Image 1 (cartoon, rainbow, N blue to C red):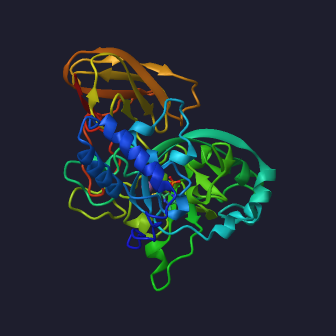
Image 2 (image 1 turned 90 degrees about the vertical axis):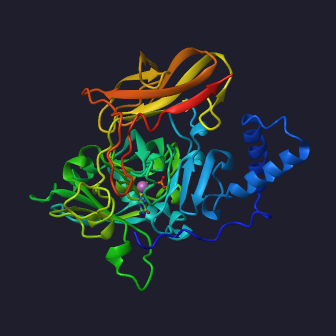
Image 3 (image 1 turned 60 degrees about the horizontal axis):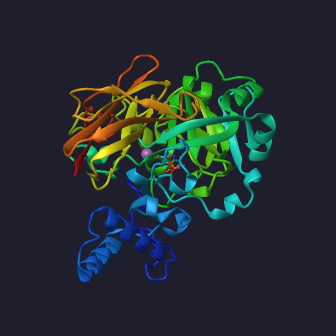
Length: 416
Ligand SMILES: Nc1nc2c(c(=O)[nH]1)N[C@H]1C(S)=C(S)[C@@H](COP(=O)(O)O)O[C@H]1N2
Ligand SMILES: [Mo]
């Protein structure tokens, strides 16, 4: 990933219409941080500092809610831990963003139905438009979209890359045509094709080897069972920033495998030799660069985290509280979630709340507690339907991928 747009033009903070909301948000954050009692000038200074620290939304996603986002760079935005609601689906206005390359020109969403995708590795290969796809089938599915680097910021050795906390993830409802239906309509997959390879439709920067920058990922062909080519998310046409007009959805697989603005879907005998597959996104031992002998970031593992109370300030009043969070199994449904308020010494089973949107969605959970004054470490652990339990520790790796350690995700709160 040599070509990463980290310094794209950002809107001028003075003229940016979001600035007002940003400042309002900072004031609220300060109040939450217990700074409300500070002198006026200290308060004003702190507000100014916060406003400087909080980068404005980049122009291409200036429709996102600035109060719920952490802007790492113009191509990496995460959802604040305090901003995850409890009604399961992550609003598109609050969902994280990760771009390895600048998106295609906005003109591609002016004629969504005209977007074309090449299907290869089937008996009757064809180029199909979104309009064609819409006539071929329909499925709707809720799925956790999570960057493989989510939780990287919780690795003590701070691997290089965006230091995501928990917010490079969301639960999204997608609509589109199942890949299975599509391949059947095109005569089935050619024998021996072991991978499903998707290619992003970005215009590649000139002067660089295309293989070094192209967003092209292969996943085991079996992943196609529940995969889809989607044109809608959370009830709207997929915004360009999230991969419209057409996105490959591979449920249970990490974010990078879900190719935005897909222009080619191929069943292939081998994995693509694009750098993003060959050496990038590999679980390599600390100090070693990724290579094809290391596991690729594919399936997600069971993971959960607490979002309330007070994930950012850690300051909570004594008395009754509802400990809330999210839990998912990756490939399997959530069976149960346990919560500890003593750093993992004792556990209580939480209650799963709200409708079950299927095995690829996350579940919200709640545990009512009475918090006594003092310092407490709140942790949670999910077990999936096959009995896989979220581990206590992380697997150390150079890229800081796949952190699902419950200890790293625990919250320490001070109850007064
Ligand atoms: N075409 C394309 N697809 C892509 C990417 C990209 O840069 N280009 N980034 C990937 C990565 S690393 C992640 S985590 C997700 C992010 O999806 P989002 O920006 O919709 O949240 O998209 C994936 N699909
Ligand atoms: Mo990612």
